[in-house]
Image 1: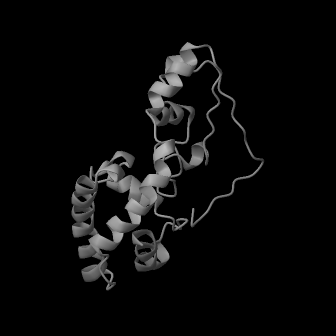
Image 2 (image 1 turned 135 degrees about the horizontal axis):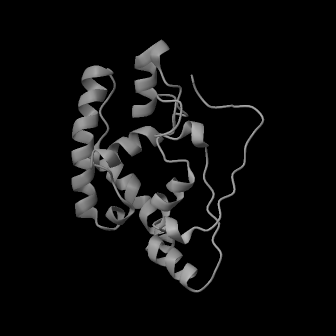
Length: 165
């Protein structure tokens, strides 16, 4: 919701996002109000975090963007519905990956986007919110850079992207 209404509000100054909420999710992470997977398994903590996040977002939606507020109950119920389906896939990823490396297994990390869309190294502001370089594989996975011994990059003959950049 925030992605789409912000883009509409900006008009010709819009970035041209995919509208899937990636930017607002990263903003929540940076602003330390993001909901983490572990929060889905404790309804009290989840409700508290949703209330905090929606307090700010509803203020923007209603007073700036002239949209209806998002309800806490509806949001919490929706998230809880997904929690049990996700539970079997939740693990301590850094521990899992580093253990695999300790056992001599080979790991392959694949990232979407590309360096020119990287939030730090790309054509700012027309970038994605994530780190798209090989270093991003380290920060995103919890595998230290000294454990990566080979990086393969794939390039296109021409540049394409979603949005205005």
